Length: 166
Image 1: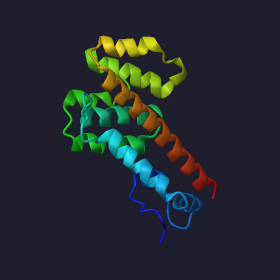
Image 2 (image 1 turned 60 degrees about the vertical axis):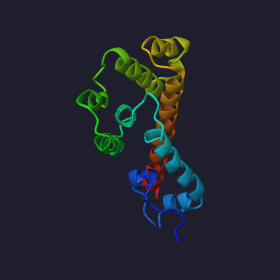
Image 3 (image 1 turned 180 degrees about the vertical axis):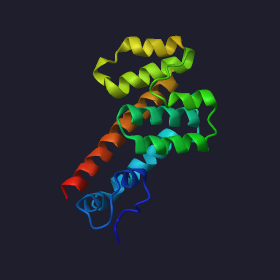
């Protein structure tokens, strides 16, 4: 028995196969793998999404993956976006060249900053979200989504590196 199901996003995206050192490392931490998948599900498809729809969350996640040069992970989030019946405007969020307007522009600006230059984020960036009509609870949800993607992307990259090095 492997200890991991292998159908979680991280294992699939990293291409981890039974018998590899990366698989053994994940199997030894099966509880963390399960918690990582549960966090993915909670961040992307929560029962109560608040003011960030499932489609918007998936679009922002796809954008973050693209900004971090992970097109395969972006495709995963594109599929979630389609599953959530995203509107054409929401689908555009996934394109790093799209800047949007109003509320969408504020979500994008914060996401781009948090996912590429997190040290540069400050109180003014939170104020910009509030000025765009985004409430405190949704700002927390957005920060959680960004934090999860940062973790997930780095974990996948680390596993890919382990696989390359044998």
